Length: 83
Image (cartoon, rainbow, N blue to C red; front, side, top):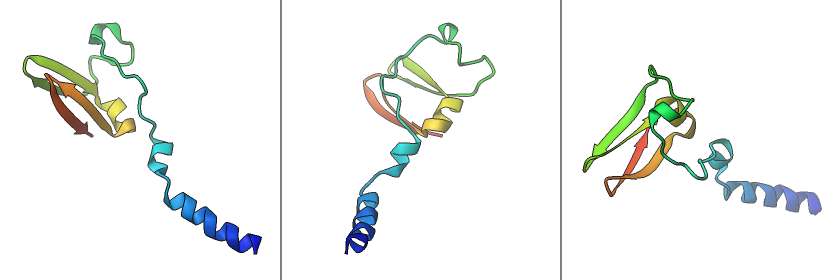
């Protein structure tokens, strides 16, 4: 009876999990920095850039390829970008 119960509970629990979050962890406290101050972006790296209301941001494609999505506010406008 215990084996039957375990074979029922484990798939039920797993179906309720978001296993994609286990593989692709979001950045906990992302911050912005000028490109000249960071060491993980090269001048030849591709970026996704957005400018809204005079505010411009750029996200490195290499980093977006791992996390798959960026949620941000640019010029006070909510923006979602993916690569």
